[in-house]
Amino acid sequence: MTVDREYDLEGQIAEWRAYVHRRRELHHTDADELEDHLRSRIGELTEGGLRDDEAFLIAVKRMGSLDELSREFAREHSERLWKQLVLPGEPDAPAAARSRRELYVMVLCAAVAALAVKAPAVFGLDLTDDAGFYARNASLFALPALAGYFAWQRRIRPRVIAVLAALFALGALAANAYPLVDDSQSVVLTAIHLPLALWLVVGVAYAGGDWRSDRRRMDFIRFTGEWLIYFALLGLGGGVLTAFTAGTFQAIGLDAEGFIQSWLLPCGAVAAVVVSAWLVEAKQSVIENMAPVLTRVFTPLFTAALLAFLVAVVWTTSGIDVERDVLILFDLLLVVVLGLLLYAISARTPGARPGLFDRLQLALVVSALIIDVMVLVAIAGRITEWGVTPNKAAALGENLVLLANLAWSAWLFLGFVRGRRPFAALDRWQTRYVVVYAAWVWAVVLVFPLVFGFA
Image 1 (cartoon, rainbow, N blue to C red):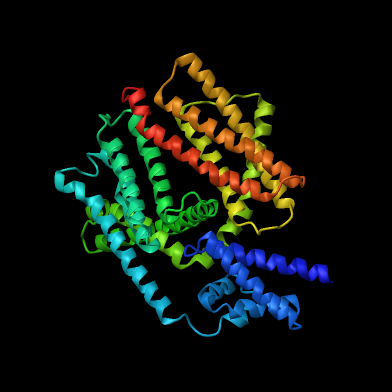
Image 2 (cartoon, helix red, strand yellow):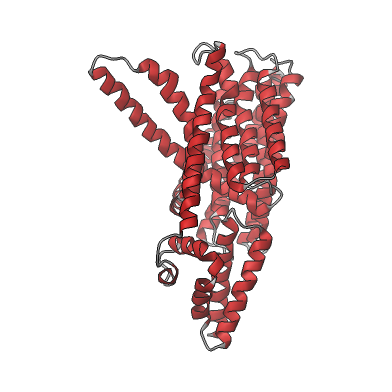
């Protein structure tokens, strides 16, 4: 019995520590110090005759400087007995005041993003007639405001803010200084890859400048998944709002289409980028319960779909068409698979043994790896036959980047499922591979137009 209690206690402490790590206010050194305090209190209580579980509950309650953290942790694990120990009363006044300040700053940043998307109109640029300009610069309207919100929230040092500003300026230079023709492949590649590059710049702000920390990178990966969910929900709500706006104005003989196209849609879209981030931060415990559920629902579905596709390829002996739309489809599929893997890793309970879901994920990764190899073979054949274009070179590079990630992920996952590797190795691999993604997307934005003569 003593061994079981000790094992349970360590599991509870590991879960508590994992939650502490996810809090943006605390660094690794803070978490280590807090865990030392927690263990010290537990030791004192067990020496006084309490059982391990009782000592843990009381020690968490007595962590006075962590009252708000303990309260949030209890909300996330509402089925736990010790919810009753840490939930009495309402949040204190300083916490409520900070929440109001965050709301005001969020509204300000969202307004700045909305104004930014309308600023080019002052210089005669129209959203319809100058679609190429807006496509290249779409991420520059919203993401600097979002980075500014996180810079204020995390109290980032001036030196880090200067680096963030320089990276955004570099992105703006690449989008506007190069002589890109609106119907060129380089414009399309810039419109696709610049938002990804600048999103990772936002990640530096989200991490408070501590981008070298594996834990902070995983926090940002988790945030990205949660942000996508909220952004999609706001998009659905915005669609309903747009439909009602058009319908109600039409009922009184007014055409609101011009207002919707020129103001409501562009301003609402860029503002939603900031609002979604604020919702993730403000309602963290709710969405953290939603996203793992979605991951567990869609992982088996995507696994079945990929396996069915591979069976169909073998049955029909058909190759993969490498037209641009098809390549985009397969790349998106691989990105979704990688996203499911990343979010499953970020939401996994520390120290849990491999189970059926882990084996299902391994099957998903291996299936995606096989499909990636097939796509690469098709692209290589197309390049050999017809030569290199910016689109084909980008597709080749992206699939090679994904191939390396999927291949090593499959190897690490196999070792974990067989009990030969710790799960932490897979966690570290994914967080450190973010640097490769960043290097690649910046290369496409900055180098590809030069190499291919802005074609």
